[in-house]
View 1 (spheres, rainbow, N blue to C red):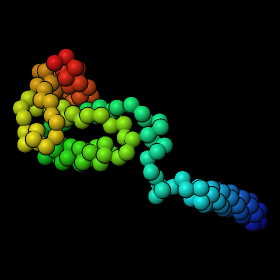
View 2: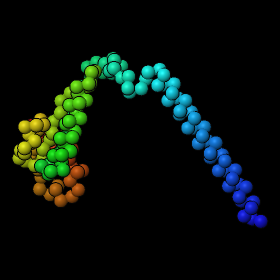
View 3: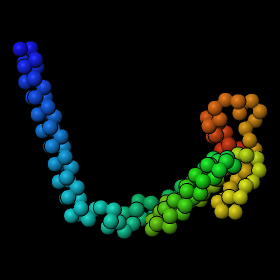
View 4: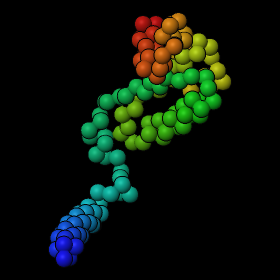
Length: 143
C-alpha cells in the first residue's frame, strides 16, 4: 500500500518534468526559427556588425611555450587560428607572440613570431611551474 501511494507522487513529478522539458525545447526551437528567418545566423555573417564595434581595437596574443613537441604542436594550431581570425573582416586581432621560456631558440622561430626568455630562476622550478608562467611575461615586458 505504501508503494502505491508513492508511485502517484513519482508519476506526477515525472509528468511535471516532462512538461517543463517540452516547454523549454519548444521555446528554444521557436526562438531559433525566428532568428534564422531574421538572418542572424552565422551562415549569413558578413562582418558589418563586427566592423562597427571593433573599429580600432587590437588584441595582442601572447602565448607561453616550451620547446617540447606537444607545446610546439599547440602553438602551431593556435597560430593557424590566429591568422584565420585576423584575416576576417573587422577583426580586432593585433600581433601574436610566442614566449619561449627554454632559454634557446627552436625550429618554430621561423614560422611563429617568438621571443626567447631564460628559464625560471633556480628554486622556482621545483614547484608547479605553470603557476609561474606569468613570470615570463614580466621578463618580456622588462626587456
